[in-house]
Structure formats: C-alpha cells, structure tokens
Length: 185
Image 1 (tube, one colour):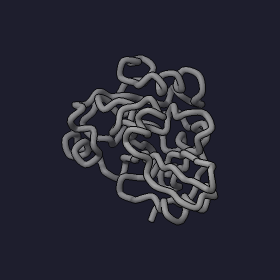
Image 2: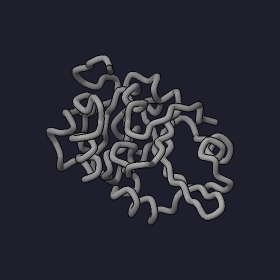
Image 3: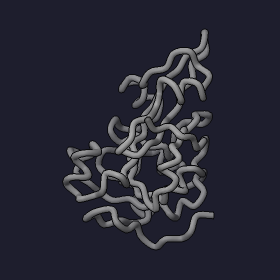
Image 4: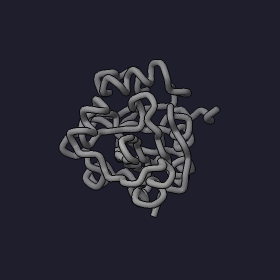
C-alpha cells in the first residue's frame, strides 16, 4: 500500500487535481488504466500545461519543477531472431537508461533501439512527448529504475502533451508490467 498523500508537494508552481476528476487531460489508454488497472489510482494527480512546454527541460524551467522529480518514459524495441519485444523504460530526467546493456540483457534480445516516433505513438495510443508508463499495452514490460521508486513524487507524461501526472515514486513499481531494476547509467 502506498502511504496516502493529500497533494503532490515540491513540484513547482503547478496546481494538481486527482487525475480521474479531469479525464479530458488524459489520453484514452491512461484514463482507462487509471479507472480499472492501476492500484492506488487515487494517488495519481494531473495538471494542465502548455503543450509547447511538454518537453522535460522546458517544462521544469517554465513551471519551476525540479528536474530530479521528473521521470522520462522511453519506448524501446528489441529483437532476437524473428521475435520482437517492445518495452518501456522509466528513469529520472537526470539520468539515462542503459538501453544497450542492462535493458537489452534483461529483455533477452540481441539488438535493441529506441522505437520510432511513429511506432511509439501508434502502439501506445499516446502523443509523442506525452508517452507515459500508465496505460501501456498489455504484456509490455515497464522497466522502472530504482531511483524513480525512491522519490516521494515523480512527474510523468499523461499521454498527451497538454498535461502532466504526479505520482508517488513507489506507485511506479506497482504499475501493470512494472519491473524495478537499476537502469540508469
């Protein structure tokens, strides 16, 4: 059980609301996951932002949100023989995921790369720059860096560029498909 927190704190100048009270700020897969598959979904908050400021550095600067409280979700695609594996990696914005070694070995693939923008968008049903580990397709591994789970709050995408989610770091480890690893370089 995630310790109950009434509101996200220390995340800049933003006003946060319970995510499910603002469904228009969530991509459809995110909304569906929060409504049915995410444990402790009542601990997920959303805020509206300028879509032009969705990229992490611009977002943190504009809204005075600490970079170390933001986490980036990247989609990777790996291959071994004829089998393709798609996964998501969640790491703090201050770090980079060790895709070529740690992620590749963990997924048991020979070759791995970041998924193309078109593939990531079509496979997730989310906007590029807003892709989040909440609401990813069933069966996708969600590789969460240990440091993410240790943060009191993390700011992640909402599936669209016009908003962000605030989630207790420990909740990232409870997302469907989540596996906690030391991913950061």
